[in-house]
Length: 271
Image (cartoon, rainbow, N blue to C red):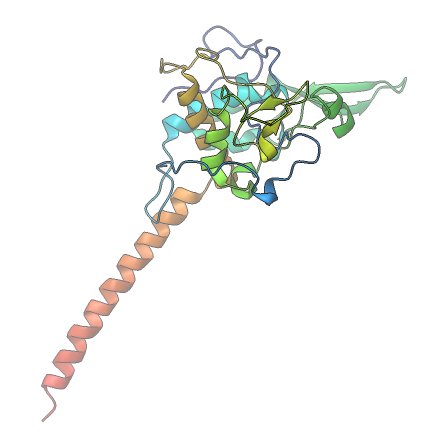
């Protein structure tokens, strides 16, 4: 199983290299224009997509999840954190313990202050969380057209429109605004954004990331993979739950079958 990309470019060349360019983010749905409201459903209804993890027999394609982490690491993590996710959680991607420790160590987290009162940092470990690259929401908003990028830990679970809208949003740039719609300077038109306007420019570009498995990094592929990764982050034990649920149903059906047989035999012996 291949190793997903890192979130810093200091790793050896034998590991996937992460490049943090001047990219605003990778999930734009909550980076809204002032006054926009996703709950108002003032966005185009996204087309329905087919996802491997949906339905009672759903499961995550780990290859897609790993590629999605590469997109998050190379693009999204420049602006977004995942404060509910630790580096140790990434072992669920198929990484070995040594790989998780090496990945975590390429990041630095706050470690209080030194004797002079200056902030210091230390290499992260598997128990540290994937924090935002900004010290606070005010700084984050100032760096992103006045809108602080949202934390992505549970975005796929709580975002209006769900994974279909996240995917539609990421692939929805490039359309011309409808007649009569004014898009203020600094905002971008996207029909799947609340009010059709977002503070984030297109985050994904053809060939914008390097996939360790050699998969062509089209915009559609990146969007599908990172959406799958966000869904996995929001429900990392979904596959196990579905497996247990299916097993329980099979067991109950088997018990019902035995009960019916026992009942027939019992009543057949009654005079």
